[in-house]
Length: 172
Image (cartoon, rainbow, N blue to C red):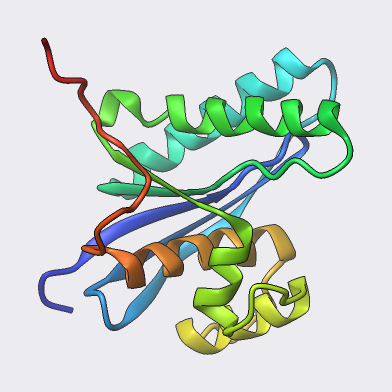
C-alpha cells in the first residue's frame, strides 16, 4: 500500500497484554503480526517489567510509528483499574525511546469503529477484525482487541480532537 503507516495496537492487561501490528493507508489495513504477552505471574512489578520488555521487543522488531492503546475503564473495582493503568503505562513507556506517537481510545469507541456498535461483545469484535484483515486463523480475544484498537486508530487518523500524547513536550 502506498503512503502507509505502521501502527502497534495494545490491549493492556496485567496478566495478558494483547498486541497487533497493522499497516494502513487510512482506507485499508493489512495484518502484519499479532499475539499476546502473557506474564509469568509473581508480583505486579515483575509483570510490569515483562510487559515493558515485551513491548520494547515488538517496537524494535516491527518499527511502528504510532501506538494506539485502549483507555482504562473504571467500573466497580478500583484495584483492577489501577493494575490495568500500570500495565498500560508500562506498554506506553516501552515506546518512548523510539519516539512513537501515542493515541488512546475508549473501548466503546473501538467497538463502534470496528463492529458498528459500542456494545459489541468480544466474539463480535474478533469476527469483524478477522474479516477486515482477512485473517484465516482464529484470533485470541486479547490479540483481536489489540488489532481492533489499531484498526480504530487507522480509520481515525487525521481526525481533529484525537487524544494524543506527543512524543516530545514543548519547552516553554
